[in-house]
Image 1 (cartoon, protein in one colour):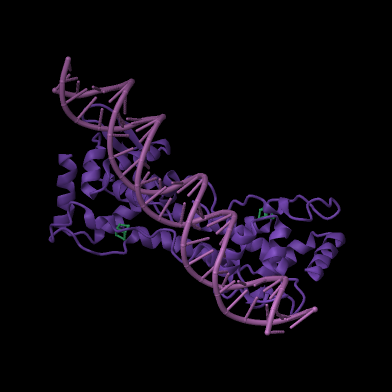
Image 2 (cartoon, helix red, strand yellow; image 1 turned 60 degrees about the horizontal axis):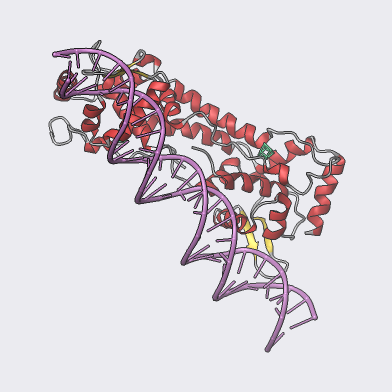
Length: 162
Length: 162
DNA sequence: ATAACATGGATAGGCGATGTCCACAAATTA
DNA sequence: TAATTTGTGGACATCGCCTATCCATGTTAT
Ligand code: SF4
Ligand code: SF4
């Protein structure tokens, strides 16, 4: 049970887009080359990011993608939710409704959701809240601290060329 | 991205085993009949629970399963981990090692795990810790508060018969 | 011995994740 | 206007995991 590879694709792609010059876009082709990953599949990932309002797109020649809002307003959870969807980790099929007591109305009480679901979803919410406190901007600042000047320049050069 | 149905099977099965009389076991056949679910598949679930040390088994006639330790020492997380495994939600394939800067040693620094992985796994740990605070015993006590006397007796009767 | 039980392996269907291909729309450029 | 570049969406293929079944085997009570 793991997040799909699309989450990793999204994080790494968005990371570089933070420093994209104003009014400039980057295409799927360049981004997939940067990471050495499938071009057509990455386009599916960006389609999800666009529908989630994280990036915006411009079709046509010199078109491409850019962040749809400030990197400080894009949280880790926003990115994960865009790719993985909104369904909770534990969503049961209510097997209790099939158990042998179900036919005895004096015994069976149809009260779902129960504590199992509630507890697990509360725990999941703790994780979500933590992930909402970290933004793409924060990630960029933290990571750039350890980048050498050469590396920063190499990334900036690459962003100018694409 | 959701927990498998096996988690639901495990929770509902273990719930009834809390009140199993001392030195008594319950078989897969009876448990699957109780819930109206697949007998052979439930046996795979119990196999995982046994390997995780949550239940113990006795083969042979009148054999079956019982809790391997006190219900107060079985946490929600123990149950989920037994079924879903121990791998973290986010375990990347290190796509950074394929990117175009990787061949320039002056730019690329091979420093994983990075902040992405760290932050997500820290958030996941908050969830795990929450799930570790709730035990199977606690679940049983909370749920039994709302059970009518008829229902408690029906369950006790059923446990005596199996 | 026989029956009842757990155990593990082999197998199969379903379904979602990953990835490819193509037709189409939109925008720029010539 | 025509050609080229780019994103969009659907259809399709492949793969692995989840769910489920079946069977062969070992163990224990009767
Ligand atoms: S009791 Fe809880 S876990 Fe069980 S079927 Fe109802 S909501 Fe789902
Ligand atoms: S930088 Fe982080 S997410 Fe990216 S490959 Fe390395 S560990 Fe994985």
